[in-house]
Length: 356
Image 1 (cartoon, rainbow, N blue to C red):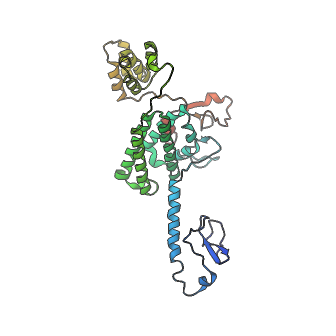
Image 2: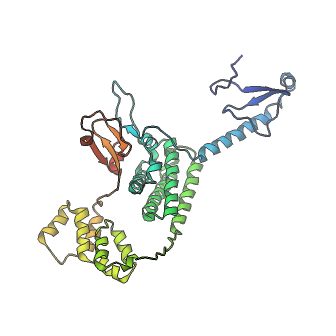
Image 3: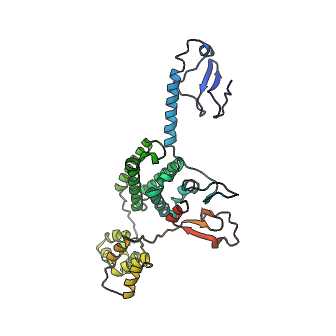
C-alpha cells in the first residue's frame, strides 16, 4: 500500500477523513474548490465506479491551470539575507559549479537599488544590456525576476518622472529583442510557454504607450525660478551636463538657453570629456583648429565610439575575495586592506564577469 501523507513527494493521492467519507486533497496542499465532491468509502469500493474519477480529472486540470496562471503572474522576488555574491567561474576543491548571470540578478538587491537615485541609471543601463543580448541566457526564475524589477522601474518613472528617456530606450531594445526571438530566431530559445512571452510583449507595448503619454506637470514656485538665474549660472549648469541630449532638450526651453546650448566651447568640452583618449579627437586639440564644428564633431565621434559612462553609485568587485556587492552593504573581506582591493563595476563589466 503506498504511503499517503502530506509530503509532496509521496505517490498516489492524499485523503482526509470527514463525517461523510473520505475527501481527496491535491498535491500542492490546497483543497479542490467548490466543484470537488466527497467520495464515500462505499462508492469507492463498488463495482460500478467507471464514472467516478471523470469529473476529478477535469478538476485536476482546472486546478493545474489555475496554479500555472498563479505562478506566471506572481510578483516573484528572491529575498536573501546577504547582499553580495561570490563570483565563481569554475570548480575547485573547495567549491563546485559556477555562478551565472541569472543567479547574480536574483541575489543582488536590484529592487531596492532602483529606489536610490544614485543607482537608478546604473540598474536601467544594466537591464538594457541584458535585454540586448543576454535575455535568453537567464533561467526561468531570473527572467521572471527581471520583468518584475522592470515593472518597478517603469512605475518609478511614471510616478517620479525620473529619466523617462533612458527607460524608453530600454523598452525599445527589449521589444526588438523579443520580436526577434519569437518571430525570427525561434521559440525554443525562450524559457516557458510562448504565450507568456506574447503577454510580456503586450505589457511592454502598454508600458511604452504610458511613457509616451507621460506629461510632467508644471510646478509653480513662489520663489526664484530657473529662468531668473543669471546667464553665467545657466552656462555653468550646461557645462556640468554630460549628456548631449540633455543639453539639446534644455536649449529648447527658452531662446536664451538655445543660444547657450549652441556654444562651440561647450561642445568642445563635451568632446574632450567623452573622447579625449581617442586619437582622432586628440589631433584636433593639438592642431588648435578653431574652425571645427564641435557639435558636429561630437555626433560624428558618437557613431564610432561609446560615451564615457557616469553613475552616482555602482556595484563593486573585490579582487581579493572575488565577491560582487553594493558598497553600502559591504562584504566579509579577508584582506588586510580591503579598500585597495575594490574595483567599481560598469554595467558591461558586470555582464562580462559571467561570460564563460
